[in-house]
Image (tube, rainbow, N blue to C red):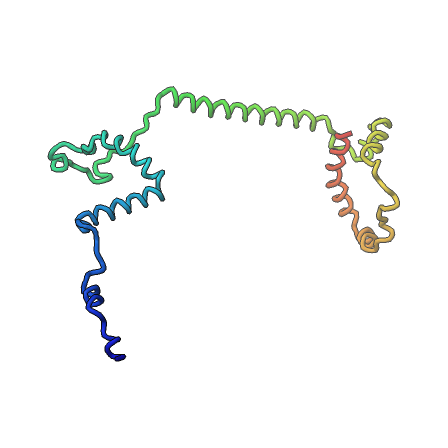
Length: 206
């Protein structure tokens, strides 16, 4: 009895034989077009600004001519002759006008004249001041010709910063004392002669 109940009825068998998965009529004929439309709608939703720009730009682009404007005449490259770099290249000649040459020499002449005038004036100025100095006089004799006011002004201006407390003394220096003792009269005279030139400059400055 149990086995009889497990056997499916005829109604159930007929239901199983019937196709349960069905599609509308002509579904596959418009399937590809429907998929493309759906994809296009999704793309427009994500990139609406791009598509709007294309809508406005595309008509403008269609008005532009598609003809190639970069063109050359026929047989252009067949008749083209290219010279090697540096071949038959004539050297550049710089022509200097006579006026330019004259101006250059005038500049040189003016510079030489100025140099000559300065040299002559310096030589005359030095000789004029040296003639007024008698080289035969000693330092003491030349100092005697100076006025007391000039000597006082010189000492106040040039020796105002002299500090006797910081000055060194030859008495405490054995090397200087030894040199003075062993120096001959001739050496002392030569030393005084060489120092006389510096003394002349001091007197001249006063």
